[in-house]
Length: 362
Image (cartoon, rainbow, N blue to C red; front, side):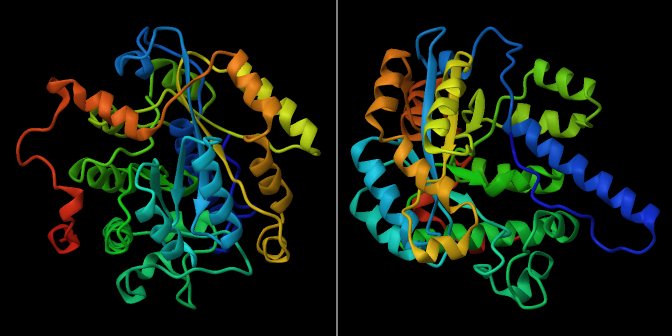
């Protein structure tokens, strides 16, 4: 389940206004959770079956996120891709170590590596700047010109044209560095917090034919969350339904735990509970260092994540469970193998000839 990224409401004046703002922010983040979490199936055919995997199989993408954040993340992500501990990874373009990771990716093009589109950051002592000139994206930066430091600030201030401009700037910078993303992710799901931002994000994914990490929003999902009192607008449901590229059936995170062995057991329990279909499981591997300890208080969880997926005990467990592995490269190959799914001539931009000026928001 997506963690609540903030603790208190902003100071907008009197208490009733604060309460209304808090409810709107929480409702927006719940929508993001709807798109990110869920085990129920309303349709008999999962995306695994749509893409030709055997019926009833649990198909998993073990995914390492946050490459580009620091050297402690880059190195272990590279090793895990090389030894097969993960099938997929994503990099953060505004991260200080992105260019270094992109150079490695150019030399290892076989791997499935996407972009984690990063429009805010959560590290008090490790601020990042946007890729676009800050004067062109004032709604997503603070007074010092750094990206918004919490999700709440981003949700209230972001303008869709500025978000689109920053996404395109991140794509442009990646392509200039020879980085060819196999998929796109929304860091912490924030691009699904508002319909206008979700539309900008998915339009870019479709136009450049780079699949976005999106869960199939089934009738069970909709009924379940509405029954729990969470709003889910028809416009967002329709937007997801109309999105033409492949989706996944579920998304999970490697659980936090109080010890490494507890993390192993929690991960096993998570896998046992997976429903048939394609599930992406997010991990945050990193190597321990003094620097990592200063960046994030959760450094120990990151170090355990790095150990977990390469653990022989865990790998044997996944084999015994009969887990089938895939990644976004294979998913797109299967998807495009169906001629009926291919875009019409001129319906997309070739990402290898990306020109952000052609996409500049009007």
